[in-house]
Length: 102
Image: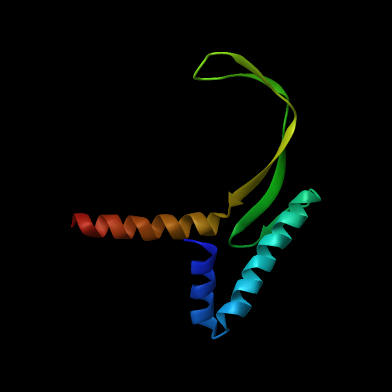
């Protein structure tokens, strides 16, 4: 699903125009990125948490050549799914696939 697909789905559900909805979706994404740039975490209850995790410097290995590669300190955006979100997806897929087996 793309940004445009998400905007279309929201526009159809809310009655807002597609242009307005695309602006809101883009604004949300930019808001998340800006917050993470400031190392703020974002918690959306029932959905999940966006945060930044620091990765320490380490020596890695190139799997193709076997050569050692030095990786410096870096920061990685992370998303942790809420329990409600996990349960909803799991229950839906179990119902879908177990229903086919019967």
